[in-house]
Amino acid sequence: MNGFSRRKMLIAGGGALGALAWTWSPSGSVARAGTGTDPRWVWDAEADPLVAALLDRGDVPRVNELLRTWTRNDQPLPAGLPDDLHAFIERARRLPAWADPAKLERAAAFTQVKGPYLLLGYGLGSGMMSTAIPGEARAVYYSKGGADIRDRIAKTTKLGIDLHELNAFHPDGHIIVTAVKTRLVHAAVRHLLPQSPGWARTGGGRIPISQHEILVTWHSLPTFVMRRLAEWRVPVSAAESAAFLHLWQVNAHLLGVPDEYIPATWEAAQAQSRQILDPVMGPTPEGVSLADTLLTMASQAAGPGQPIARDLLNALTRYVAGDRVADWVQVPREPVWDPLIRTGFPQFVALREKLVPLPLLPPIAWTLDEVVRRLMMFYLSEGKPVDIVIPETNRPG
Image (cartoon, rainbow, N blue to C red; front, side, top):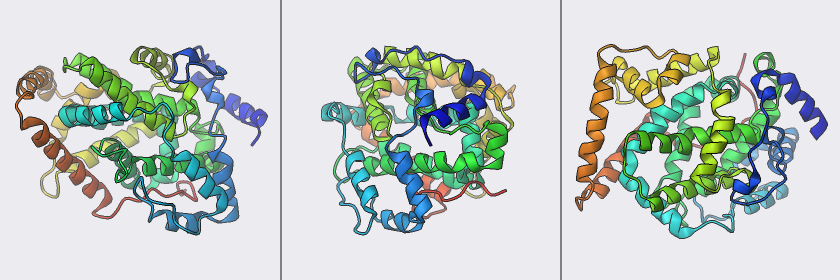
């Protein structure tokens, strides 16, 4: 689809998206320069036509079957892939020249120590925020992933787990593979979702998952979590902060975000977030439905017969995500648990940070966090391997 017709489709979407102006300067990016093109008008110039061609040629089932065996960063690509896809993946799997191995190692150490806060921030904060971002909520709801939300969440969770593995970028890690596969999925959704009647009614016919929307989601993760760590008074050194940002910068690059849009500093990230995340958030029926599904699944994650009390989960979600987001997605207020969480969580942070210097705490904490992550994945995937596959259809109906 050419740029002019894409532009018309974007305008047809109307609403708040069309009213916002892009003023963030590429001088604040890791590239330090760029064209300054509004990311709402930028998708993925390399992946989009490739995946559209795979779909049109009927190659996707064979490609998905072949790519199931490609799981580790150091693995060669399976034989038999179409030549154009093989060439694309070999380019897409390369780390950017500006990637800093020392910072990535430091980010792994930061994750090891601060895991509980990150789990809460991502799971109950970012997860709920995604349902209060209308474009993202609708894209999830009407795409194929919306028909099996457990599977959709499992794949999203896999991306987060692989990014935060201690060996994430090592040869035996998995994040490079997972990020590249996710980039292919995004390209497929861009091709398929405009054909969905549900998306046509609510998305205005726009092509979804523009670079603007990827950045919105990006800020709902690391930028949001860093804000919460500051609000919770979790000690974070300058080196840890820079390393955590770098982890997410590299991840954005692997997901196909042009370097001119990736913030170089937290100051630049916060400025970009204020411009593109805050104004687009709000309630939608799809978001309310997804939020309820997420909380229902979270309450059952402890296992059969051991559900987490929904009122406690509601209160914790409201504390982490914030009242505005919780109200938008209709998370009930809990008169007993809300004040207890507000007073008890800061005490938990203070106690835990006093224990952090103990020699065995980081590995023990990491092990416990990893058990929680793996149990969560086991529950979401129903004990089956999680494969990130290129969709061929939208949500039925």
